[in-house]
Length: 298
Image (cartoon, rainbow, N blue to C red):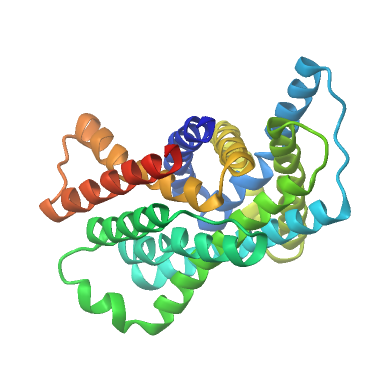
């Protein structure tokens, strides 16, 4: 059950990274803030890998072509998913975008079965459905119910983004599994460094030709950028370790426990209280996560 610890660490780091990225986006724009998780995360991912190699005395594992192929698919899918997420947020707002994107656990379960043979137990599928319903109930705002199913462009972009996030999770798990003769932790961190390097290379080329200001903007806010990069790399390390130990659908479903945690933190820090429907959704998420853990432990 070490995957539970890794996933909770990843979800916590991601909450703080998202907060920093939001602050950064206000200063340098959405594109500038978004690329920080990739470009500024690479040095930390490489550092994690070097420290692991030194601490264990192991050598860098062989990275076969199959692993590189999966890692590249995951890297490209995640960038495309991030783009669609931003499009959805711009069209429909954050709340509806979050609902569409967080259909991801269902997609992850289906793609995991189809592409790499990951099979969830029956209770695991029930947990995925319960958690997804909890996300919908917690995220929807008064008056948004009609828009949830009427804005076709947002539906396709949002669910497409969620599907691509799901595909990236499956691809990263496939890349980790494709590395032979290394322990789970080393395989996970190796693929993390490789994937972030691929993503950064793609983005640097794109920014060089299309939007140099979005690249140089975070340099002026380097303290925020470096911190966000570190938290992004730490979160990704947790996700990848989780992917190395269990089905990606388990990891991405458990990750949604961040929603009630964020609500509690918001209450503590800002005194804001969630609406009754939000708490109903949070209860469903918590119950679904509990059922997921029971199914995996059984």
